[in-house]
Image (cartoon, rainbow, N blue to C red):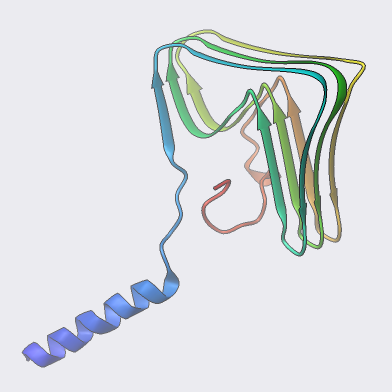
Length: 157
């Protein structure tokens, strides 16, 4: 009986290892105020991913994932000249670009200010290929779960 129980436990443990660990979105808790600020001058910020099922996530002055802020939240991105570019190419590619934005399950107990100002600059987000998605958020809140990639677990991590 002990041998049968040991074999059964071994099979269960092996099956769990074969599937690998299940990724989860980390919880970020900020007790107090949160300030995120990005200032750009005549620079380029580029994020590129290529290949089948590629993902390009670019976050500037943004909250993403499971975030809880117990206080005021200020997010700002300012820039002069240059480019902010995010691209993902290939079949089923996903490009997500967020500037001073909240994306996902974000809870703020307090005031929230979001500000983006770009002068003489361009902000580009591109996803190319069959079944590809491009989502761009600028000074917004986005809890659109259908806008996220079709990855089964662990988005966006």
